[in-house]
Length: 192
Length: 331
Image (cartoon, rainbow over all chains, first blue to last red; front, side, top):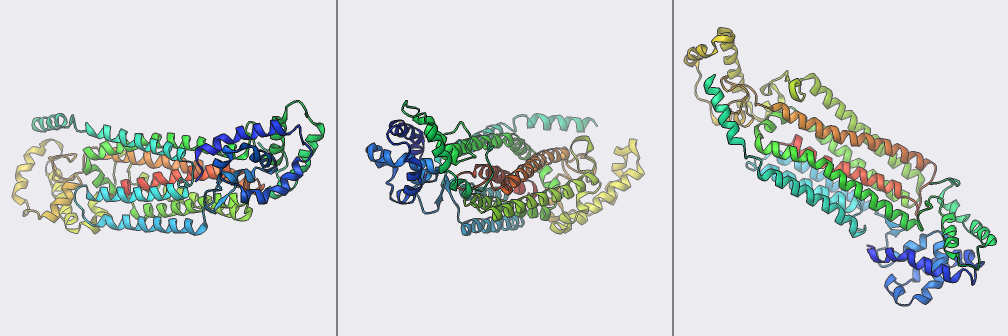
């Protein structure tokens, strides 16, 4: 659930802090890092407040980041859900199995629906709707797009948009020469 | 990326402070080199953090953006083939109806399930990597590879069937079986299959009576022995599949196959072939990931490679989700 903003700011904040602080108390840094990490991660306010009052945040930042970068990730996601672990969302196992179950059910459904006559294009439309639902499930949960940065979602949707544009442009004039082909065939058959 | 020891994440974390402290002793102190100093500490704690990244988070996000950009190009890559499919199917629906009887829906459905299961294990592997569950991670990768190999084996069975039955693109399209002889057609349209056989016998007789040249003359005689008018159940499926009527290969014959049926197999082999090629590459990358996992490289701060491989794998799955109904489930 992390936004673009806090992450993008991260490197800057780290730089500021360190350049200001290292000269003052260099030796105490690594030990402090290990000790201060767990409580800080829990009590750290969301990034927004850090921005407004940079002074207190400065002191806590470098050691935590120095420790292993783990805590660093925590405050990015502090406003997110409890599944956050490290650099990105961790999907619970039950959810993975639920999605697989849904996908398998939809696969059976799409095979079963083939034997029912739904009109000339009806079967194709239904099959494509089912496929799209399956694709959406895979993207949203297996591919983490639900919890991922929205920019990645935008990127992916852009490619889908261009795919749709491409297909619809190509289909709009697909039959343009068909009557010429048919007439030619008819002539050929007559002359035979 | 990882010259330092390939110990587990836990071990790395534990050993983090000493190297950092060591750096301090050398001290670039006083003169504002704090930046480099601080980064050294982060890098010392994260052996898999490449030197050009500041933090593991930055490295992960950059990698993720990269893989998504790649997936975007992949979608557009396949778009060309989907476009060919769409245009050709909209213009020659009879070819698709005809050709799909040659495809084995059961094998297609089996492959769909196999890929879906491998998608689950891939997504699970990402979770394992995040939580540094080395054993489960390796197991899930192995299952994913196993599913991928199963998929390729089924593909091999399908391809070799098509090869032996002469179902190949272009001039190599020489079907050994007529579709009314296929079980898939017989089950669906029993009356039409029977009627088609009668028509085929008529054509045989015609060819016996008038070999090559006098085909037109023979047509007159036949009219006498023509059977009663076909019912709709008998005729409809044959027209839909382009076996009779103006769109058939030889409209002067009683029954033949649709013109240009080989184009379907061109599209079929290109789409499934390119997809299968992606599966092969996926197997290679998963093996590489398995080797990395065996060295215990993955943990909360370094699971990008697993995540990115899984994303690629899901995309391969996504493409199959569309290919399956488009190629196998034509009504």
